[in-house]
Length: 632
Image (cartoon, rainbow, N blue to C red):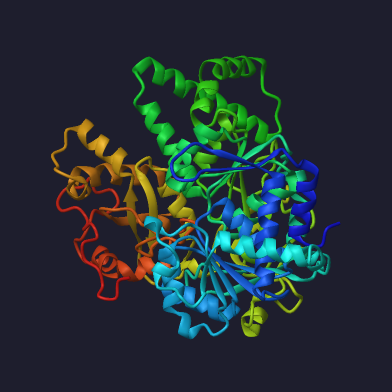
């Protein structure tokens, strides 16, 4: 068994040689193929280049770039030197970038472009360990590095790094093989800093043993092989994409294609025709919204046929979940639905797509059911950076919506007295980098990792997450309320893209909603409402009445104290750039709470907004025009 990920990669490359390893784009042209042999050559040259410039085993090197084949090459080149790779989201704040580089004592930094390079250079005086910045892309406008006013050799280009590597191979052809052979399973492979939704980022230390402990179990739960094609588009700085994407692609020997960006996923899926993808729920929601929009835009008879087929598919899926044999009549209906509807729908979503794995945040149950109903196995899983991504995942053919599946075979689960999920297993990390106190707090006295998530384990050993421990709302009557459950219900409303619920120490709950602008605008035009732009539309009493009715309808299963009494609509979506979303599109609850504090307070003010049951007579809730002076 290989002791390092880089050794595993080179072994796989020696087996697959001239087969395609990756597909990527340069600019907006067509996809290009690179063989395993060519990719291995590039990575070894990059690794040797690092060695020639003084990079030593055990030292840290950072990567700050969008997802690409060069990100992967940098990662493997660092580990081929028995070094430790440190991912940094390119969307990170300047303070987070400085903290991570300083805390990790990174010697080298791979950056995607000049903009990110300038952020690192700006902090150079506070980064005494920094030796080199490697610019992965050519300078814009045909400039040279000298013209960028970098005359002291701090910044080098990728080609210069590879040239240095080729020169070292002339003198010491076995230098990289020797370094890889010295790696041990217990060695640190990477430090992944949490995205910093609250406070200072924490560096999660993951060893080769942690990563291989997960990779060894993935084939039995998420089966792929060398015939599969994977489309990579989530940030490689995130543990989910790194382990279930990059590392699992290598171990499976499949083909990895890199999207041009998350906004080009639909286009790239049509070009690549992947067989599997991994997503965060927000991406899955976008695909679902697009499909639903197409259904709603269909003619009367076509729409009736599609809705009938989806109903049949969901019924068949429920039989599968419950382990029941479908009746002959249901089988016949499903056969017809497959021929008339599902084949065409799957072709539009992804011609060969057979498996989707969702993680990183709670998925909407309706969305999971929909994709499974039309014949695309869509599985929700669960894990944290501290568990090396997946700790639990649903299984193909044994998929239970509303849960994150059973744990991986080697993972043990325990529910603490307060409902917190505790874990043990080979993927569980050993601690935070240079943060002993935080490490002690992360484990109980018996060595169980405290996940911070509240949940239950059912009779089939499937885990259901109910909320984040720190996010629980305790209202003024002392009732414990799980906001994520209510938010998930609100997001089943077709127009709603995000919902954040508030109500700690209050009599009742309120919510801030964001809507899909295209769908909402289409609804407004269909209804004949008068508005000039989306901001005006978001203020219309008619829209608030419509949403109030939908909220009442979907809240029937909730207890009285769990129902949202008032809400406000923002005239824009949350975004990474505004600091409201993490790089993996999770809402930063504390940032939203602070940024829209005045808006939330206004919802509690007497007479502000529409109460539950109010059909919207009078003034609708405010739409987020007022913010606190400390807004970020």
